[in-house]
Image (cartoon, rainbow, N blue to C red; front, side, top):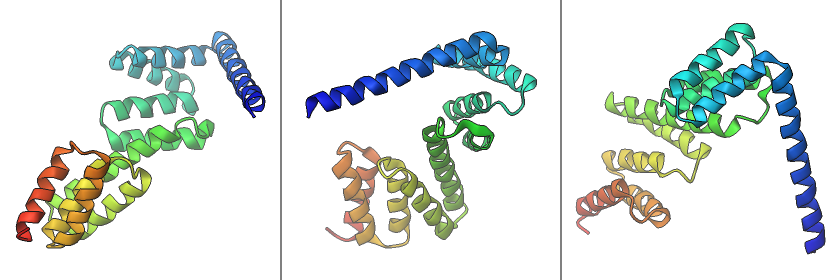
Length: 193
């Protein structure tokens, strides 16, 4: 019923406002919290250099600060330094960040696995590439990059029917994906379709 849903929504909003007020009060009384907040503010403003300086300053004062570690992880993710991002985000989780950075951690891990798969594929290790891409897809089944790369590996292995099906799945989700279109055209040509 609508009244029940509205009451639950109001309760959630009240909790969120209370948490924000607690965080603001905590930041005012804790200098490390202030520095971390400055880092997030700088990152939100697009000043990644300043954000890094602020997070590092907070970590210099309190090396296990979960939010400074999480901030550094998010920063490294934005900078596409995926291995460093995963490291910082793992440390944040170990230092009590809970699920606050779970999405960033999953994203960093996804892109790190994709990067590692590309390196394995370039080195001719398609088995390893396939395994890494499958792990990335399990982390984020909606992101098409690893799906297309896995289809590419299948095509390289001569598994044209499986590659065709994989490219078609991506194109069903994202009809304008140029890599999936290119791959599909290639496997159809290879199968004389």
